[in-house]
Picture: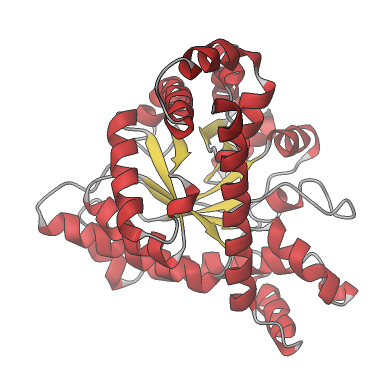
Length: 351
């Protein structure tokens, strides 16, 4: 586990992209926190897998099916209980880190992604229902999700903005976060405990693009985007626009690297961890990839290395006539549909 401690020393947190009742009740999650894991993310696909494969749910599912509840209400009771339990396990870390670690995410229903007001209503309801200071409400970064973010931040809600695939989407995210902080400060309310992360998905970008690229560029786009996005994010948090907020104890929106399991067997199974380690960032890692990184991963401050080369990669890709913003929009919609499908699938056994 020494490599996780090294990553922490370099200023990056590694979160677990997995959650189940067995993980919590067996004590495994607590052990992982002791070994250097700093938080937990979940999504509908993760809960679908957990409900189907973890026997600890069955008696609760049987009990809930005897009650006059909708499948979504049954799902929520199960998911909320898990996230509350995970938050409780993570709470000491959250308190020790001054609210910067020990956070656990739960997603709003993905079918609300194009309705800003419905997203706000559901996020506020889940936040109140979960009633834990270290929970994050996960919101898809559609135009409606970005529109909802300032209101949620102004209400003091921790947000994990998810399914980002481009630098333009990220810029909208940190601008919306800053707007929410200004709204809250205008009400003379504290901002020092509000945590917001923007989940930038990586391996899906390479999987979508590689078949159209020459061999010299394959497997390079996502990491190039991450490195250049991080450089632009650093410029933003050092700008007057954000330093004025930081002076009032606001924490910056942090970049969270997601989709960091390697999908192409030709690439290193830890390439989306080793190549994007940098201060004040997070990497949420699937269980198998985490195991591989602990076994043979190496920790170094790579996110700020070869940034000029990363810019050159993106220029070459654009010169091939590839529009990365159009790709980002398509991948966001595809990712959202995957979450909708997983949500529908997890509700079926609860009907």
